[in-house]
Image 1 (cartoon, rainbow, N blue to C red):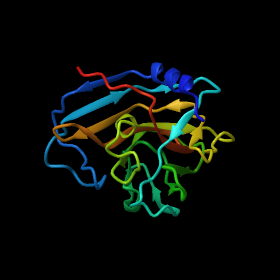
Image 2: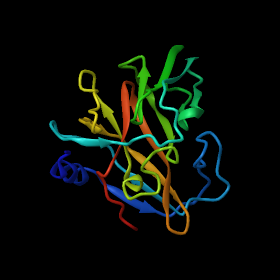
Image 3: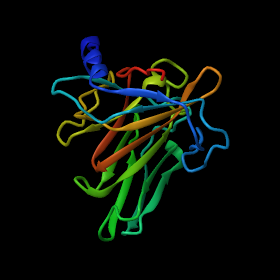
Image 4: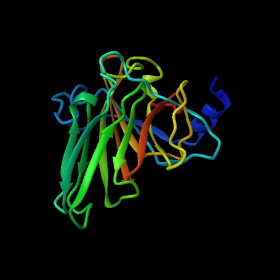
Length: 212
């Protein structure tokens, strides 16, 4: 059983602020397509380092997801690029200037029960942060309180296993924004910033939305 105390510790480690939207944002079912209407609510969360020994719970894919490895690869140069995994409702925007030379980039949505990505080459660092966009409708927690409190988390090399119960030990929670839609706002899209590659997962139940 996962530790509620550890969940509480992680919640205190994250700053979350809800603000009203003032522009167009990515739609819930396709990260690469803009949504015509603004979200009902946006919630931002800051980067945080997670203390060693803390346990989080990985988000599970829903029945609409095929749960098999999916990957996309491209040679990306200083001009940048966008890579997409439609089957995982995921995309990544590498902006111009993030890379100094052409680099072979691969993003793998790992098969299995949990929302987890392997980003290669491991250890790659960007000169300008890149943006990852994850649609949430294909996750099992969509429309629930847990689905409304997702975060993106980094698993370090050698500590990147996810237990059969979903337990994981992230070392970073990434700066992120979650977009909510509807009269009773439901989280539809998670957008996070990353500066380096390795393994990232979605976790839930570790932060609190605070209305502005």
